[in-house]
Image (cartoon, rainbow, N blue to C red; front, side):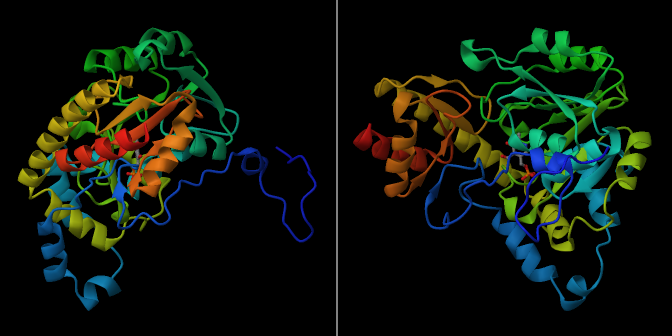
Length: 359
Ligand SMILES: Cc1ncc(COP(=O)(O)O)c(C=O)c1O
């Protein structure tokens, strides 16, 4: 398709039309060190100390000099996730999983279905691929998963459906039965179930892998594992699909240090369980604290909660930032809403105390 010429500054080369049309995405990642990071749904206390110890022990000049070899890490991760090593690709975060999936299945002008609001990178990569994007809104009432509306939107033209379960930023999700209904209705489309927050809710589509050739499941080491800087995820599907995902992926997009860290991380499941228990307790504390302040919130199945600040959403975000507490404004997609990541109970007590001061 020929690109439509538009006026660009002198010396700037004309990009693809899909790139011209894209909305820039630049998350506010600067200056976060040392602040109370309740803005990106990360692990707020960091990776397991055993990961750091493992890296100290195993990182060598040779390990850095050699191009990555994935065999050993894939074997251990396969055992951990209860799948075969042929049933997944390692990816540079979930973000690359989304990109590889779209590169494998979606052509210019194809239809991709996403929910709204949801994780921004679905739209980002779908736009980049030149797809026609169809958005299904979360229900106004409790921001519930719009299962019937989504089922009604699936048609012969649907090439891919991208779903976060539970969803960011709503915190709501659907059941395994709901996912099966989507998979049944969309047999001709690649259906991604992004389980970035699986550990906080326990619902997974992974056991459905053998039954559905149209199912793709992603997991990440960025959230509960506290390894966002490593950029590591896994994209699961049936092995016949995985062969094609490999074909569409650059051969070394995941680095050796990330695979080392993951091998150590999955050996310390006690650390993950303890953190999840702490977050779930802190989430209850947060609900109680918000109720005391008379603030409306949406119940969440993940490690973050949306609350309503009305027309003061940005004022509240900025006021908290001045007090060293980072949260995310979401009012541009859900009027009046601010999203706070749930960390430890101690961190949530501090958040509530600061919020009370400026409320
Ligand atoms: C639903 C969802 N998927 C994926 C990610 C990011 O994952 P990764 O760091 O693995 O690219 C996020 C991060 O906010 C998310 O909310």
